[in-house]
Length: 292
Ligand code: PMM
Image 1 (tube, rainbow, N blue to C red):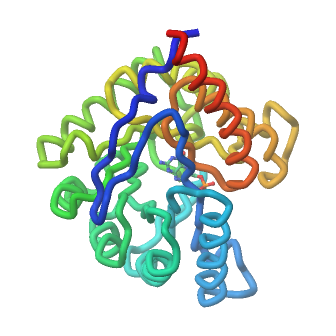
Image 2: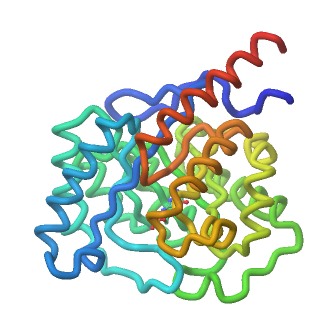
Image 3: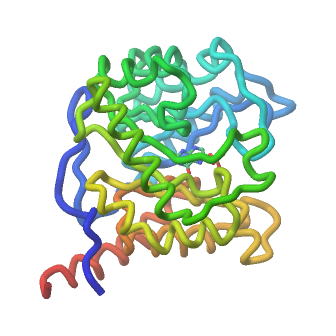
């Protein structure tokens, strides 16, 4: 097996110090600040929970904490920017102050991204890859934050209705290459860009599997690759697990495999089990490099 092209030693420049990539796969822990999932407690409770959750994930080994205030699950409706900021900014501020992990903000709104970076976020995770807000590229360029560009077909409200591709791997790769070019044309440094195939965002089971199997094709573009498959529907389809939290073992499997196939960063809810699994995976893959 050839060593994946993407797991080379390199540094993603970020405000206040960069993020080192290499044979060790980095873990991005998911911190959701969405009061709908805390129906009885409301916003104050959701924020306190999110901070506790972020600190626990950092303690468990997360290198990055991805703070999001709008759910992008299939079928979901958009959240107004003011509400999203009210949710995420205090959580970002507190996490940035209290733990060493790099904070990322999961938003496609330029206004939210700018405020989040001012509050201490150092990566902008844009699930629309600059397609959701015409000002996003300028904000990324100005702030010098890292920029995750994720592929999505359609929009969350309707994306799972009937996703269609000719060649999903080639189309996702081409789309992300173009968005990376667009970011650079707006002044974003090439080294600041991370690409993500967007597992579950306008994709059938077969599309998801093909994208994971061919992560190397994405890595060949020369940017670091992020894989986010944690607890997603396709894992439930394969394993029969209806409840997202019970998709842990499938999640561990897919991210270990993704790391071996070239993912530099994995975005997961369950950091502690992934940390151990990746330690073993990375050791095996690093050993192989010595024999190349
Ligand atoms: N998935 C979700 C949200 N944000 N961002 C990136 N870059 N990649 C993903 O795969 C991704 C994301 C949806 O998952 P969640 O609602 O369980 O956080």
